Image 1 (cartoon, rainbow, N blue to C red):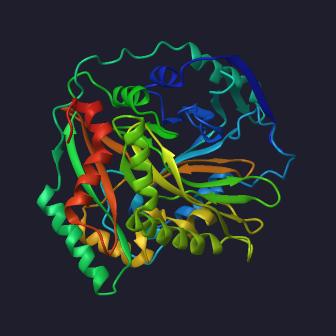
Image 2: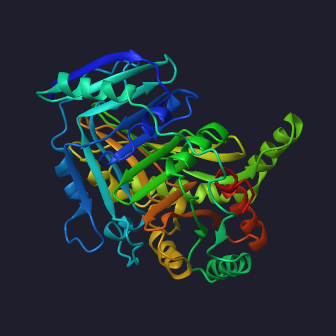
Length: 451
């Protein structure tokens, strides 16, 4: 059992603490909105003790390498005190969408310069309890006290000054409205021909940050304007990622047995202008045959994926078509659970389930092939930002509402995307409008105008 030190500290705003760590090696922030139990905890870490990076041409088995980097899972312990953070050291990583080519029999072009997988092993980190308004400085290993003190010192670092002007010019579409609608029409035709049942087709936008602006400025604005339970940041080298995701991919609760939970989002509608209109939007969404069918197909896909790594008969759907409400959208969210087979590493679970079904389609492999024929490589978009604990626990997001940054000689350039699940009765114009609704918060935070 690894030695741990947990030091309770006074509350700090996690985004401001993160802003004090820019320039450190492999800085990560997993940032919740503080709402409900799933939004209780945020985490920040930097300067990992080990880095695992799998480039597109790397011949290593990425999932086995991930398990090797984490090391053996600690023996099962009594249930964790709910006042203590679920993640107390281990890996934090970014899996690009194209990591799926290592899990499924499909060829995917890569989005240079993004790796398929990068993660750090963090034995010093901060855990922010939004409910009790305290911060835990955590150290793991033989030097746990010193590592906890190192993490606690991050709380006193001065944050970089925020950028007060407009962050970027209006976003430039990578795929025009007409081209996107044509792509949707092609998918509908493939569905009619029996090739697939559903595919998630995305549309991209690009731009450049203003001189002096930083990706963290986007994170700070989204945190205020449109908080999300699976927001995140990762910065390494000349790359940075800002995510405002509402969606959980997989959660594993440690113990014996270990419980796996997936919460795919399928079905979206905008918020209403007042309470009455907003409730009307919820009713439209919950009664929509198209959105319910879209959601149900992915629930079936996730049931099949989890069955690969769960005890026979344990996979169930306790919640179907639940509505979750966010700053500017309502979503239909279902929950799929199962009991993990014994002795499975996190890498083995990801191999069986990656990439997330909600952003591919059904059947998964055929949908991925269709996507590859209609979109440029996705890179981090539709991948996952995750933590994997020494105790066998995991939590991970689906990287939707995500912006990927690359720093060059002229500053930071970026790409951001939004997608829609296409089914037999989809309408190309409506699906294109849905992508614009989904990208609205990011577009407003970056440029002040809608895409």
